Amino acid sequence: MTEAIMNTYGRPTIGFTKGEGAWLTDEDGKQYLDALSGIGVISLGHANPEITKVIANQASSLLHTSNLYRIPAQEELADLLTSISGMDNAFFANSGAEANECAIKISRLAGRKKGIENPTIIVTDAAFHGRTMATLTATGSRKVQAGFEPLLNGFLRAPFNDIEAIKSIAKNNQNVVAIMIEPIQGEGGIRVPNPDYLKQVREICDQHDWFMLLDEVQTGNARTGTYFNYQQSGILPDLVTTAKGLGNGMPIGVCLARGKAATTFQPGNHGSTFGGNPLACAVGAAVVKYIQKNNIAERAGELGEKMQNAFRERLSGLNNVIEVRGKGLMIGIELDSPCTDLVAKAMDKGLLINVTSENTIRLLPPLVISDDEADKIVDIVSGLIEEI
Ligand SMILES: *Cc1c(COP(=O)(O)O)cnc(C)c1O
Image (cartoon, rainbow, N blue to C red; front, side, top):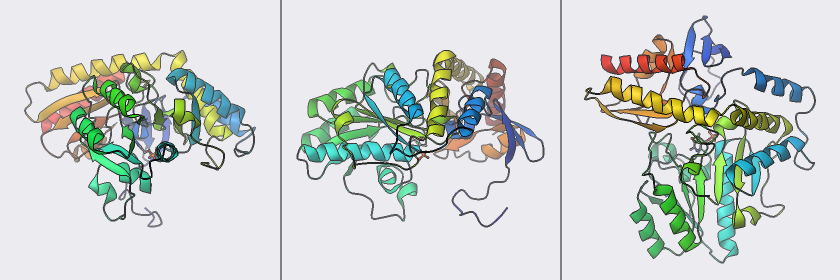
């Protein structure tokens, strides 16, 4: 492998030349069942023919014009996403971190407009919000932050899934303008909060005139059984971001805003050269329509529950398994010790998985996997855990 790539991801040992559905083929022709989907991105499967057609058609007519001109595909995607989410409007970016930057900037600007000079955003332990300076500051991992100090001011950390901690901040801090949380923590180890957590956070935000900012970069786009995860809590956030699954591999991120958050920016406050371009938005619109037309969210919810139950049954009695958890096709299996070596062992058996926060196996398969493929994932992963 060339030394001309910066050493940020170590040196990967294998690469792929072709994908189809939930399957990838490596350079030697070996096939792998993909239970990671490029980290929750390829939700509709590799080389999904309907999406490929949209990419080819759009690429052969128009790629980019800039936001100085109207972009019909961007307007269509904004209409689709606002109608699904209950939000008012959208800003398009090219990644999850950028979508979060937008939401952070809106929160700060709205705070300053109401006279708060040091607007502060509450963030949580073990959160992951991205790798830009603002989003790595918001991230709750020293590994992500170490060496990049000085971090940004204006962030305050609280434990995840702890309403009392938020209430106590509310009592003692007049500078808070927003709370930023993942409805289920992804990189932090597939942490699912109490069922009433989001609802309680919403109440506190209402009492104190804070924005509720949900990072659904990973949980969005049908992965957890509804289009957005917050829809299972019967609430609306003020800001919600998503990215990963929205483009099925085409880089795109979006920040959706509602109410005061939707009218905070004026021309000149924010922008992006590539964000919202015709190609990314045409693909995003095709992804959203595919999800709706094929009831992908319901399928992900049901199949995920089935897989979790199958894991629980098969792994019950193994005392190195701490917990099987998750929602929809966002599944974590926490073991009692570090298990990053399972990634290579799974690869030997033709399965791609991920391990996050050292001891949690993370599964984010395409949402279009078959029952047989789901069974195969459960079987291989369980076998690896049994062998430990
Ligand atoms: C992946 C992720 C991000 C960062 O997205 P990028 O596209 O890598 O910038 C932010 N938040 C959450 C919850 C994520 O899972």
